[in-house]
Image (cartoon, rainbow over all chains, first blue to last red; front, side):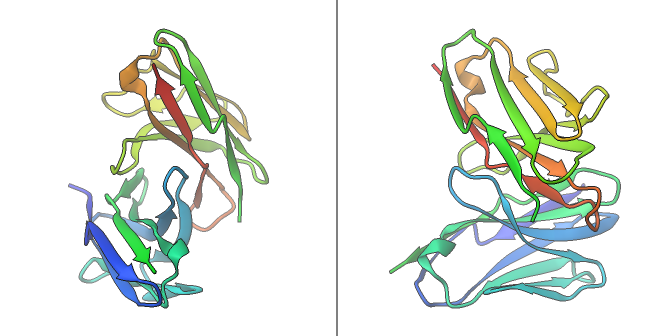
Length: 111
Length: 117
């Protein structure tokens, strides 16, 4: 069964600190993996998208990694800001099928 | 990046009425659009896949007669919630696939908050 699991479910950090969010998936055949940021009451916004051959991709303070062998991905946020408070969703695309969504990690950045 | 809009952003209606939600791709053509619903603190759940000029494909458990989808052009898809009831209250999000992008990147709209009284 195609599944995407994220951890932790929620996370609270102080402004300026770094954090790493995890995503494990069992999706086959794998097409690509995406990280989205979803603010409360808004639609998801794409942060990164990685294909099988890509190990890391950065978007400003966000850096995603992908290990296709272990089927794991991480999203690292550097020097967190209050505006980083949101839900971060890992989404895996299986070739020829719909997107498979993780349940997300809720990040709260406090001052 | 590509922009997808939704209208309205929020709507409150009485039980038994019908509500139409529009999803537009503003700067690209989308042969395929997707409709999701999301309950509080839950993941997005795909409701249906809408292809321009053809009937939508609904996910298991989604009533096609209750959630009418029309994809009349390459930039517009509509979702009509017919005879809405309080249990239909949810956050509805559309996405559009830009066929020009690598892997057919999907871009999400800002969502529509539906509250049925």
